[in-house]
Image (cartoon, rainbow, N blue to C red; front, side):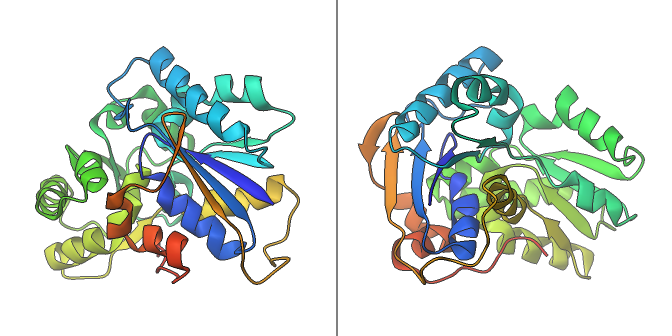
Length: 265
């Protein structure tokens, strides 16, 4: 089994690690766009074009499925990707975990990039699950970029700024950008200090990995205990994992097999 993942940057590590935990025998193709990131501020047609460039590079590896491991690209590029690749290659998008957060019945916050926070897409998603009165949208200025750089000081400052915009009685947060799942433990620790109680984080990596297996009609039981290889593309060129990927448990796991703790829960 070979599965490809597309994102603007290292946010795809969370979904890649989640899939590798389910199927350690699977080969993974990671295709990101360091030349064009961040995608968020770009026009929708530009995002679709850059996502297609990444997907075409990955498609050359003949994957069985492609995961769009990026919320922004899932909003703006999914139709174009599916039109080009399906039905030969199933394309699985990433949706912020608003549904399970809303199902809890409790108030929650949705941390996302400023562009996503103000988007009609996020508003519709919150309304779809009847959570408009219980959801607090929180724009996380600079957090994704800080995670991409593995800049600890900037990550802490961005997390604090987002926490300051989050109601003090919040006990659940949806991580609405795949980059945020790489620093989930730091986000949780800060919120626990702020609220004085437990905080549940809802990420999308585990769900998108499971959905991919369902689309492939595949079992989570690996055909072999390990052995899946890793292929990396950077803006369409063959490459390797960026050095910043090794700053995160998910990146190290993909390289050396030491499983990281999941983001959500």
